[in-house]
Length: 383
Image 1: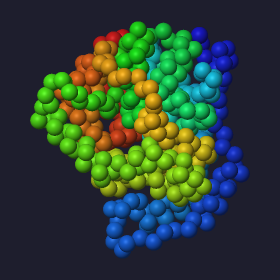
Image 2 (image 1 turned 180 degrees about the horizontal axis):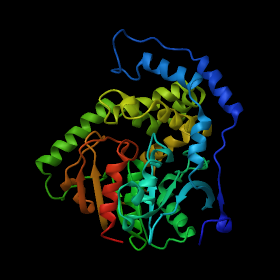
Image 3 (image 1 turned 90 degrees about the vertical axis):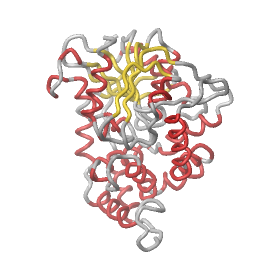
Image 4 (image 1 turned 135 degrees about the vertical axis):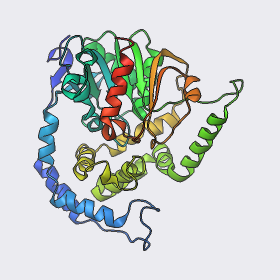
């Protein structure tokens, strides 16, 4: 089925109202700033001087309309999938026999993180690649993120793999591949795990898994990895604990204060990227603010927390099982976790393992060329 109005698929244009943007500027101007220990930098959270400058620019220098026009140059759509209104980008490949690929973003990103990657996959010839590596790319906004509907009932996050399966069916793709990172890496893994009859292969930038009694003994590299994960949780994991336990309480502040929203998210972009402590070394100030403005305008910070809460409190989780479809894994050196290959191979049918020379958690945004080439190389085996 071609994309059109049939099947509930409608073209979509991003249009944030000027009145909302003016209210945002008023709120930014009225920020009541906390104090800060002299010389503390970023050690206790987002640095006060940096945030003041970012907020000033968001209020007085950032022009959302410029980026809205750029985003609208992509092919945006909405479709009702299992009772939910889902936003997605569907860019068709420029070349013969494009391979369908659904890409899922993570947190605190939106679909915007993937936009640098799209042209590298849909038009490889224009970016130094070969026309045989062309893809049709589908980038949905997860429910409760960006311009997708905010669910009003529990139980939606675990259904995302099935929603994507229905979306790809609606778009006419019987078999396809999947890529993702962060939460999107979990969605991608479960697509391959639950639907090997439809999903031919998956490519991820992070891996999930667990160790159970009776499993083969952990290697020294795996033991070091798990110890590093525990240390990371102690130093960096508080955000995940509150989002998984009391997200509603946090949401009142972040949905009301754009400065608070910026502080919560920009710290992650700094700490989780390969930026040597300078977030604007990797992301331009405008790129940071496009992502923040999407969260602010759509009021989705609270709904973006729900995958954390529901993962923690799911009374009937589907068991994790071995992923038999071919899996490609790209590990970036400054990502949150850097597992050894043998850890991934406990749960994934790893057919390609790449340890990247640079990059962090936001792979598609930080190093789109490296990621695109790894995706192209991996999917040659299943085309």
